[in-house]
Amino acid sequence: MMKDKLKFDYDDGIKVVVADASHEKYVDEILATITDSAKKRGSGIASRTHEYLATKMKERKAVIALAGPEEEFAGFCYIESWGNKHYVANSGLIVKEKFRRHHLATRIKMMAFSLSRLRWPHAKLFGLTSQTAVMRINTALGYVPVAFSELTDDDAYWKGCGTPEDPHCINCDILARSGRKYCVCTGMLYDPAEHEGEPLPVELPEDVVKMAKEAAARNER
Image (cartoon, rainbow, N blue to C red; front, side):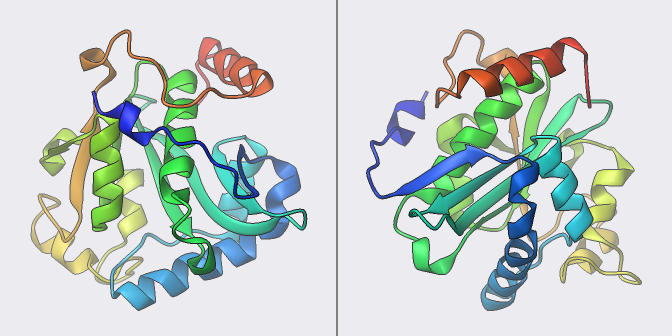
């Protein structure tokens, strides 16, 4: 495994934490940052509402990076489960432009990955991305490129991409024309059955571990 290559020591004043209800005040800035980044890259991204991200925070299914004593928003990612919890996706990964070069995408992704593995220990983790940096992080975590047919068939997930009539991503017409077989994004999958006994890339706080394990025991979505 390449997880050791993702471990860094940081002393840059930026903390990466599992989000909660107190972080809802950052949601509008997060959504604006995601939209602005997609426009600059000329790529697509599934749209989400304020209420959707706020709910993810309240359910502790999101990770946020905050900088300095003022706790300025620096980065974000949220977690979704699909297909009756057989599949989990770490979605919406974004780093504010002024805070790049701090390995924040890697740090956020490692925490979201660790939280996902604890909360849904038997689920396959997957993602769709057109970003090379995200592909590199995923690969280091143990993801492999796969055909879309190996990802969740949960229609609710794919609705996030939209349709040509109701586009959420600028590339959704390609997905529709291909019959959901391919698009601009690359499908990537992490199968926990192939990584038994491997440690998590980051150690989560005790309260988060307790929460995640209790949710797993209750088989919560």
